[in-house]
Image 1 (tube, one colour):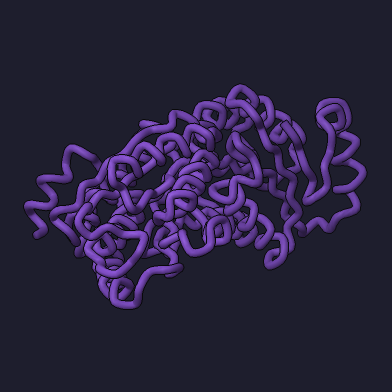
Image 2: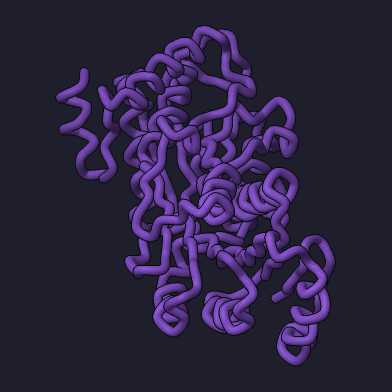
Length: 348
């Protein structure tokens, strides 16, 4: 576990033994108008080139554009969440404490009860407390868009990475949880709406930070004929990208643009713009418009979507039209895997 002030590393010992002096020394010199924010990242930490890195981009943007100061912590285990949140809250120096990731829900709920005057935000799950703003996503919308791209691409002739006779696409998923399953359901619906012959297969890593296992599962899907693999698994998804690159197949990145990891092989990215979400949360505190409760975001709010990357123009035109229908509320992708068949029957 590491705790950082801005970009400067502070040791665990300083956090536990000297946090009061640290805050008193540096922060008393800061302007009284400067908002201060603390972020507790998800396990896996920075460098995942996905969820955490996107959140970090958001807090850095807030520092540049809103003039805030921030500290952050990189836990290595779920058991550390509550302690870190408590340490930040005990300082009584932060205008907002942000938790990144669904598995911080219990810790946030417990600490929010103990510090009722402290504002908290949590990204990717619901915590219903009077001092917590919870930001969640219409996950199926993102899955649907990248699934539609995959479905259209499975029919494409003349692409050396695609066998147009296979129609098999795969997902390497992080964990068997509702938000991931909503992505899978959306992906299945999008792929099969665009190509009724699409065969969508998926596997769960069971961990967000096991790229070796992610690669193993991706290779298994490729052996089953999958030409396109979506690595919706945090750091574990990097293994799926590596497998696709080594097998000369397409990968779909997750959360942020991962095209630089495997040039020529990242077809698109299922964008979850956590950076925009973090910025919105901080901005609400700076502007005095912070509202506790559940905030549901999606394509309409510009926090879910896909990246153009290697997507052909004709495919993009079709998928952009689908995105407009989603934003308008005309098209609502299914959120549960068992509902996909009925949804397809109603929407074909």
